[in-house]
Image (cartoon, rainbow, N blue to C red; front, top):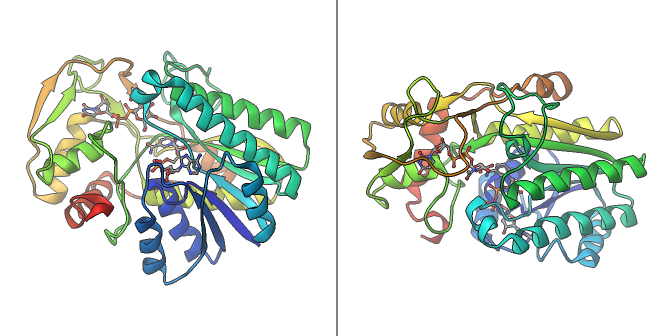
Length: 337
Ligand code: NAD
Ligand code: UD1
């Protein structure tokens, strides 16, 4: 029996595969390398000393996905595949709706045809309504402000409806907060194409000299130092959350949305300072205008994950900064070296 990991060559997928293999699970991967490199999977094999089957293909290809499920005796699916750049989703909404929705629809269709009942879906804290109060619990009001966010919102609804209509399904909607850091080996990590949108990769690229300085997007937010506060989460903790979610899904049916975060918020300047302290490097930064769509603060109430999955983040902000920098300094140009 194996777990099908869609988008397994990506940032979170590659770390999750390491965690699953270490727990003795068998995995099979499908990725079209739209935003990743086969090198990531080669390194996962090197790191774990384990081999697994990889299909280069599109999750929107329903028949291929069904064939993979049948050929590999798949019993659960972790669905990471999707486009994830917020800004690009505003410019090219149809690209986002097409890939992110059709991939989930064809996956569910193939699962039902092949008799695969368990699905772990990569959702995001972006599904919460802008004015919800922090810490965010899973039953807060939902609502989005960009097409990327709506694809997560719509996918959640599609999966919920599929569970309602098919009582044998067991689905977990994992709402990630801000995944950062890398495997402590420095062999795998986040490899954004072009100029990073997210804070931690931007800081790492500034530290390694690829970027001249970080622009802090606004210092007039209602937070302790005026800069935006987020719930940063080590990608290895996030990976463990997926392994726990698979075990949880095996013991039940139905659909649950679960936050994965630490429950602690750090500001942009807190992160800059923590990064400098953990790694003994200096980050040049300037204060710039706010980025449209940004919130003052966004952090989770992670208690449902602890209650249902037995999962709690254990890695500190120092671990996130140290491991992120270890990956970046060993691989200044990511997997392209
Ligand atoms: P990523 O881009 O590194 O990984 C996604 C992978 O999916 C890539 O390898 C890409 O090539 C592949 N892919 C995309 N469309 C595909 C398709 N149609 N068929 C086959 N492969 C396809 O992204 P990530 O950071 O690892 O994120 C994984 C998931 O988690 C995404 O769904 C993302 O929206 C979600 N998420 C990410 C974050 C974050 O901050 N990284 C936060 C919340 C949610
Ligand atoms: C962003 C996305 C969100 C997505 C999440 C995880 C937007 C508006 N939101 O959220 O939908 O789910 O990433 O992928 O894009 N910052 C700077 N300078 C930078 C980069 C970021 O000051 O160069 C600040 C931001 O203003 C924010 C914090 O750092 O306060 C974190 O930003 P980021 O890493 O982009 O994550 P989110 O804003 O939480």
